[in-house]
Length: 441
Image: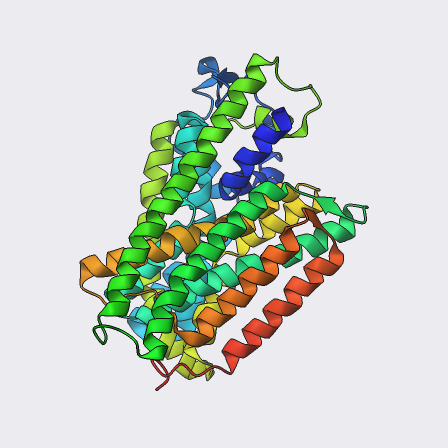
């Protein structure tokens, strides 16, 4: 019972927990962080908090700066963002502005997740899950908003589509392949109930994208140029409601399982999931976490402005399609830290956490970020819709069907991972030779 509770919670909060695990190697280099200095207190079985007597152990500006900025080696890439700003101001060489700003965003996105996780340790699992639902894909959301303000609607669509494709094919494939090579078993097992539920939500998102595309390409709109847009906005509101219901359902089930576990005397002392949670303790205070959330969000927003403005210039300088940059390069490099975390979890035989990062992130983008972008564009006066055009919609539909079929038995192996990686190579190559008439024309 305890294992089911922890796994269900982790599948929902996989992205949140990934930052804690990804920083583990660096964090345990310090002796004072090798183990909790004080016993951890448990709040109604829903959250793990530092003992008040040790609350001052990492307080102060220096302690916060050390925990947030000095413990992750990825932070060495932060100066790249400032170099991008400098290059843009001095020479406006977009071929350098784009990669430098992209590299500068990578550590900021990872640290944003770290701050979200730290705040979640104070608020409890329920509120922490809601925080993760809000900030889990904040980087993609910020980039999308900047592209919307610039009127680059196709960049918004293709970058979000690319995040789904890379998570479901490349990240999950690498996790299956790496886990199969290192776990020492023929097959690894994960909770297929949660995987099937997320696959169903992905199919629902595909349904929302297919309908406007069908109206557009069959020329059967009641009001030409308006019906597909109105349908997209209505479908987006429905998808946002469905995602909110999904979050509520998962958090409610997790709370009930926690309560039933406590009522039944809890799980055994050897439960691996509980062991992981016992050592989840805050490294910064609650208000420091809130402050860092605001700082990193603003920081990402600044670099995203330069990133979006340099996409077309970089495409011309490198002589590659904008669609390839938006769909392949942006998602892979921008989410490199989380991709590495998913593979690391699988190699440690924690496949449910890998699924939480890969499939959980894809579900959040398709059911929350994409419809939110449509609603945000509606408020900005931009005709952002769910018509991702025939090529992109077909690629997403086939991808979701392939992944859903591979997840339905609840097992993974090296060959399944290899299949997903090869499928992603085919998709990436197709976008390299794809000429989007709305951009390239």
